[in-house]
Image 1 (cartoon, helix red, strand yellow):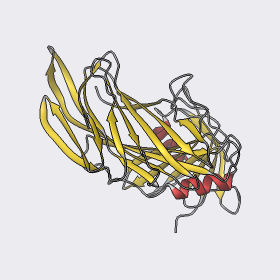
Image 2 (cartoon, rainbow, N blue to C red):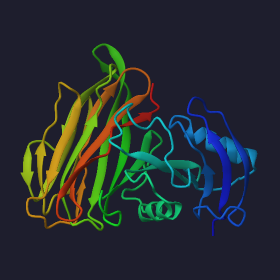
Image 3 (cartoon, helix red, strand yellow):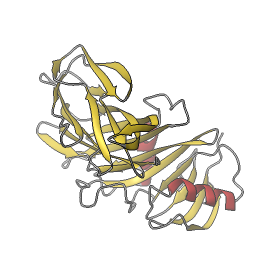
Image 4 (tube, helix red, strand yellow):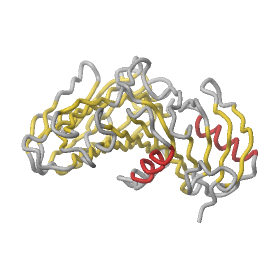
Length: 324
């Protein structure tokens, strides 16, 4: 069994520095989420999160295969996850770092419930703790997860969850792109919108945006429109083509992507109200000639919590992957 430890302190949003005011066992701090080393903060930077947690763990001689959770006892955590001004009323409430023999997978948790209690946060984290996809298998691959809990405005017990697992596969680090050396990245985005205690789920819009000055969208999938069956994704250009399918039984899809604006966007919808989840895996291929590879991820869901439909957005999440 994993001993639960709490580090009290803060992780700077401006640098990899930070400090811990102390730590102890779960008996010392009953407000711990069990199974993790708990790091209690009020602000973080996603660019520095791993190095800072590891630094603090080393300071307290916490050697081993520890899993970490960063939280603020259910209160919002100030961070740089969202594009400025584009949070759609959501707040970051936790980040877990799951340790697999020294390789960490980051999982961020967001909600539109601004009064979340610690026990509700613990339940949210536990419910989303089973990975939807296998870990990346080669050193140039990166896996990151993001979960949202959308609650009814009139009844907090009515909610729906959305989880996205992003797999970044660097297919090349030195491809000639318009006379410049470029990396080629494939991004697979596995998302599941679950009904939970809502009345029904209606629509899910998903957008994968790579519109940065050093980046360009090369291909995306699925394309066109489809009703039921299997959706096919084929990512091609510069390196060998990667193809895969995902099941669309019970719902439909419309392609809203734009090559000229460098984003893939899709509308998944249920015309009959018969499904209790959408599970979809669109993907994009893009090049990058300078700096970190940056993806902007966003979703819009239409959910009937009781009888009337409510539209909920995830906000726009900036995802940074070290590259050039």
